[in-house]
Length: 129
Image (cartoon, rainbow, N blue to C red; front, side, top):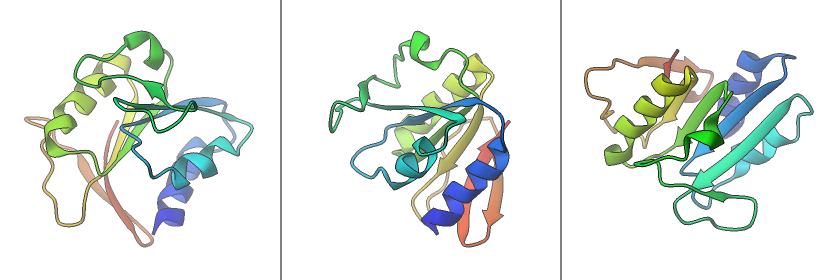
């Protein structure tokens, strides 16, 4: 499933040079590793409690907007429901595509913004353009 999720993002990117942000990365960074291995992708990883020096400290409820300048795609894996509206706000303010991979069977908490359910091979997630 995780390889399929990463493959979907890579398919969206193609050969274009892009900036991608993983928000609230936590301790699971398999997708970030796959994406950052590509020469055409600049990846930033953020979390309120960085796990190591590769993760930038940022509070999504009051984001440092400079971090997200020119970001093409924002994604988050299993973000707590209380953070999901902030992800939507960030994507809308930056004009970025948003991809949220919630916990299995979890409803989204995105307010009046409807995200589209996407099934790609074995991965299920929500997108907002």
